[in-house]
Length: 334
Image (cartoon, rainbow, N blue to C red; front, side, top):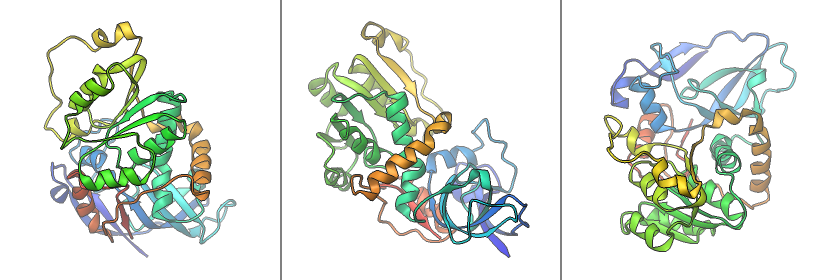
């Protein structure tokens, strides 16, 4: 049986130049391995771009390199010693260098069971889990605090604002167009929505939230980071969950000013960075919590309504996400 894959075949700034679609035979399963037919694939365009540019220092990209991180699918075959998984069962996979293909093989130890192979469960794991872990561990968000969230209508952001509101927090959500504003309004979780194309973020925060931001949750960087930093409350925490504006630039911005501690020392504030894999032991607890909320109808999961289908559409989906057009999680149907 053949497996269709999107692979990196050379380094380039363009996903179209860097990648190609190939077919390779599916290897014979080892005794403790599971073969999954992918049903939906999550798009992580910024991380992908660093990969096909050759700028991820801990990944040794050998051509042809299958990339992508997250999928949901169903089991089509199991190794003879696999005990905990059955054919037809829905699974989630989260593993660098595995997602952008029709089929994938994982070990039984890597199995993540889910109720259904749907885009919603793909959004909850790992993106929703990242929101849960970042708020609990890195942000240390407390009941009644004020949190400001950049890219709030995205796959991560729309979960962050809802989990924050469950802690009775004052939630300030930032997005970039009227369609995204409407998505955020539909969540019933945001106390203030800022469309940065119509309002100046730094001005709004300095006038409405001066020294009042308990948690800044930022995946954008540069001007957003600066605006959050300037308005941190005493003991405030600025959580960096991404660097979107820096990663879209040819190189990181070089700045000439006082070091960051000059602006936070007297407040006892801090700047922290979140990485999902550093909290691996808590991921299952996060999944159980989020799945339960979703089943009860207490958590909305927003998947971008644009239609992307098949391996070839991954490139289009990536460019769509990088263009800032997404509302919710961007997913490709296989």
